[in-house]
Image (cartoon, rainbow, N blue to C red):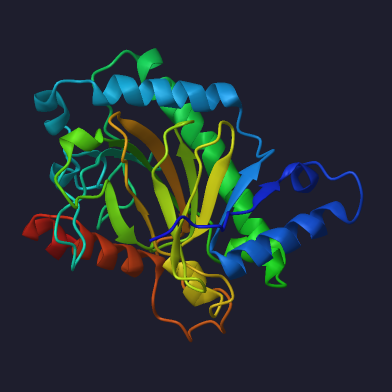
Length: 317
C-alpha cells in the first residue's frame, strides 16, 4: 500500500486550559470534536504534563523492562486479582489474529487498599526497584495523565453539547488504568507479527505517550482505507476515543482501528493511560434505566476476549 498523505491534527490545548478570551475554549472544543468525528484520533501539545515527567516515565520503563525475565514473570498480571503487573510477550492475542502481540507490558491503576471483585479496584503491584527508579516517577506520571484524561473528557462532553457537570453521572470513582509497553526490535519478532495487532480501544479516553523518534503507530482511516502513520514527537500526546465513547455518542465520535508495527531494529517504548469511568456506570446520555450495559461489563468482555486469562479469573469476572 502506498504511503498515506493523511496526517492527524495537532491541537494546542493551551487556549482551553488557560483561556485568554471567551472564544478560546469554544475553538478548542470544536477542533477536538471535528478530529474525533473524522479520525477518532488527534494529537495534543500544550497539555500541561511536564516534559520532565514524561522523560522520567521513559527512564522508569527502561529500568523495568531491563529486569531479568524471571523477575518480571513473578509479577505476572495473570496471577493478580486486579489485573495489575507484568504481561509477557505473547500473552495478548485477539480473535482472528494469526500471531499474538510481540509487546511486553506492565499495568497499574487506581491505588485502592483492598481488592473489590471482579478486580478493577485494588492495590498495585510494584517491582523490586528503588523508589526513585520506578514507583515514584511512574505514580507522578500516572496522576498527571489522569488529570489530562479528565480534561479531554470534559472537552468531548462539551463538543456534544453537554455540560462538564455530566462527569458526575459516570465518574465519581473512575477507573483509570495505565499500560507501560515495550516493543522488541524487528529482528526479535516473527514474520507477520505486530507489536500490537489491529484493534480498537474498548473504553473511554486514551492518552498515549510515544518515545520520541521511535515510530510504529498506525491509525486506520475508513474514508480512504489507508493506514495513517502517527509520528513520535517529543512533548506531543496522541489521544483517541474507545468503543464506549463511540457507542455513548451515537457514533458522533469514532473509535478507530490502530496497530503498532516496529520495523526498526531497536526497542520502542510507549505508555497509554486509559480513562474509562465508574465500574457500574451506564451511558449518561440516555434516560436513567434505559441502558443496562455498564463500563465494567465492557471491560470484562474485552479482557476475556483478548488475554490468556486463567479460567478461575474469567469466572470471577
